[in-house]
Length: 146
Image (cartoon, rainbow, N blue to C red):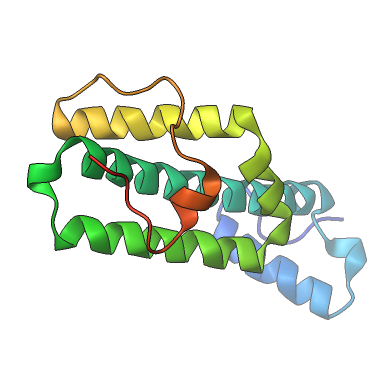
């Protein structure tokens, strides 16, 4: 037997109902297949957030490095906020830390960052791989040299 509200009809109402059924111990009424899918999606969402934050951070570090005449408080604030957000993500979800040691993950994030930086600056002559190590990138005080 499934819940009264279908997942396909209204996922928000469905989620509330599934939570209520769990709390009430009505396991026979749960939509197990969709619950499992949603739980997996939570992990994917955390991974996407980390990658997105890192790409924004790297794009701003690229701009900082390649456009010294345009440096300003706004870029510094974005850099600082992304580093804080990444640190918070890694503290709250330590299982994400191994991503930072995976070259394939960095390659994807670097591609996203260079595409963003190219779109925002009109420049395109960026290194093929990230020239900075993870410690530099995440260091609250570090900024790339000209």
